[in-house]
Length: 558
Image (tube, rainbow, N blue to C red; front, side, top):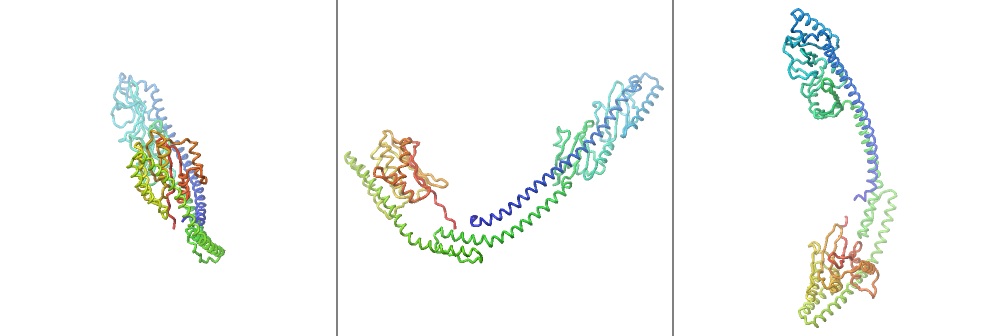
């Protein structure tokens, strides 16, 4: 079917291939552009996020330096002995420290509060909500978030006092608000605390982003990932604050950022499809004017191939193909006349050759049988003589029907079984095995195809070797051919002798050589034609192996 429309399919495939190649090249270019743009967006967002985190860490470090500078103040150094001062000195010292901390808080750009807890007098110095003592077990210098007060707090404990620095989370929200550009949505995240969003954020999106991002943050200080939320891809950048231990996260809808390029790509695909459809119209025109006449000619040639020599092309194409049609009809008429003259002569010659080759086998077998009967009569083995006589009569009944040169493999095996039964009577050490698949027993084969090979195994192989006694016949179906193997454990042949024998059976028959193997080989070539023949080699049993093979027939196409 494909061969008939090869030209049409070739043009169609060429048009499709050209369109596909252009689309692939354009897609590759677009993908490179998308990757470049995405990398630029990722790099810019990550740099902006890095600047945000650096600014955050700078402010936090400034607050840490305030606590360090306060600890170095001489008045703060008096706190370990404040309990031995009189009331006036205690009040004066606390007021001086309060004023100093108040001035230091205002000196920083961030809103913050600094206070000192004097453990000698159990009193906070500075503006502190509540009068509770510092919590125990808090690591010195580590910033923690108080979810209730929304304050970040750090404690620095010294001998006799504890410095506390706090700032509200609004400081972080102001940083996030300043970092918002376009569609990005930055926020701060810590696994043990609530998310800090900017004031215009969509907290629902940030929660969904975090559900995808959280498993990816383990052990990473910064990076970028693409996560999908409800079918939308987001480019997420993150960086961990060195001072707070929080992650600054910024995400951007990747599809919206790349939408112009993607839209251009779709427009180009639509244009390619339209060009392909236009090419299809041209191909269909060529199909009607060129391919249809070619198919008509191919159909006529195929009919001639299958023997329909009376076929004539009556189609009119109204172009140069009409001349080809006329020439085809003239050629078909000449072939038909020639076939009628030659066909009968070829059939008669072929049948005569088959009958001649088959007749050459019968005397060869008869000589061996008569010689056996003579020997058995001398030995007084009447049972073997009777069996030989009966099977010889069955054999000639089978072989003298020259009008039927072909038989079923099952019947051929029956003759082989009779022959081996007779030989078993003559040689007690002889035994045989026949293993043929049921599906092969109904195959048509030339008469006396197997029996001469079995006879050679017995006479030339087993009789010439004292301990030999096994003949095995096996059949095998392969994907494209059938195989019949006759092997024995007899004397066998050398590699050189096998090669010489193979060369001789391929030559014309001579009076100096036996005719059995040559005869079988020639009949295989006549009946099964190509890809059939005979292989001779060493058997796994120790003797000789002869394999006949021929191709399995294929159904002819309509």
